[in-house]
Length: 168
Image 1 (cartoon, helix red, strand yellow):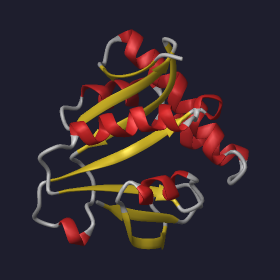
Image 2: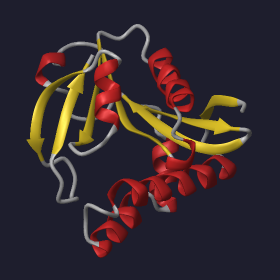
Image 3: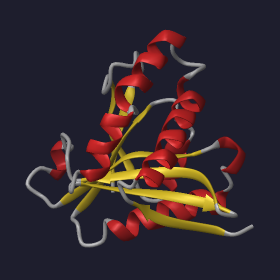
Image 4: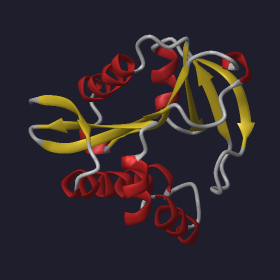
């Protein structure tokens, strides 16, 4: 199995790959946790063509895609935007704003490839933060990689889920 993580640009091909991955991962993550219509509205709002064009062309964001045997298997979005945790106020910090690997590819090697590329992008900053829904199984993974919980039980999106904030 060949695993490769690469930057994705705002080209049509890059947006098509991200459109597929963002939608599929949102369904995998949230379909058992929220009402179908709420999830459909969330996907339409956050992962439509216009939003993906704006987000991939935003200089504050960097998008990564992990490939398994040349097939897109997951993605991450790293950004300097967003409300940072109080512990990182006034510091140079980056946010892993979204991170996921499709279930059928979610082996430790694939997850590690994507995560290590995220860390490489974030070199030279004082801290990294992640905000994730509390039931995300990757929280234990992030903790094993040095992230600590700083805030729990808050609502971060329009999805009716509790979220946690973690920093490293």
